[in-house]
Image 1: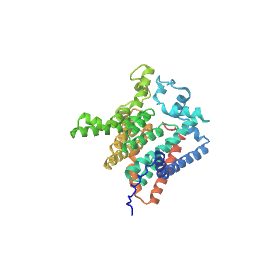
Image 2: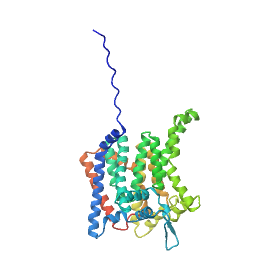
Image 3: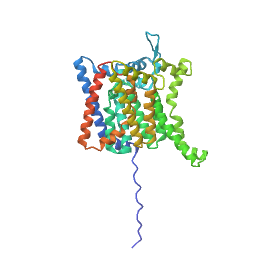
Image 4: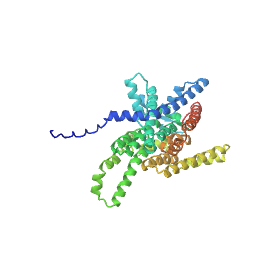
Length: 398
């Protein structure tokens, strides 16, 4: 018999990028459906409450506070200033350009008005953010934790902002996927998302720090271990490039304001006129003291309790040994929110993108029986929806 040879084994097929994306989306679908369910519940509560009050819920979502400023920029560009009775001036240059650019672009290629486009961006970004949050949670602690984490973000007290034409949801989407890219060593993707985040909100500093600080730690550790500078650059060139590119979005807008207003620190002057400078926490301490010594001292006690809870969550994140990029990101978001001189009511909204703070709770809930987890999340969804409707039908979000 003639000698036969076995055919070489076929090389395994590598899934294409669309196939990998489809697989990831299928895995995230339960989390996205659960997130959409709790947000729809919040919107239903708002719609019912608004109907009783004789008000239009859509106007509450895209016609209040910051939404109006973004809409004006989308329609007319930068250049508007509000002159206050006390002589102060609020310039629209305090608002970053990505959201109004999307509002204007979508309105020009679709039947939507810029206001409708703002809501569309907010709603789509909320799903992208929930997907990114799920991706981070499931990578670190498994599918069920990722699902619970996404839902927890959708039922936090300020979750009603996720359904508004605000930038927090768009920013969270970019930040979550940037963190996921860092965790999976897709350095340049992380820096590209950080650039977009830097065109969305000043809090992009947290995303930039989550890229730069871990990179610096890696370089320092390798250098102390005996690696030479040339070897470090060769081995970590992509990481160094990503760290250099990450702040460019934020820097580009700050330089734009500097050129437009003719001063290197013009952006910070604009923010200062809005009362949004950094005072190291003096404004926060003063507000707490005012509550404690005023007629509603229980409000001061409540704020102290909330701050204690926030500190406890931060400590849990450290004890949980979350990856350094997540700790840096959440820490910078929380720190900058607490040490700013802005209005106190804005701080919970500003901290909403710090989703890693919810990871310890998500892990604990994911360990319960499914029925108990669903019951807890359902109760939180009802409370969040009621609080959101109460806030929007009152003074509205700051």
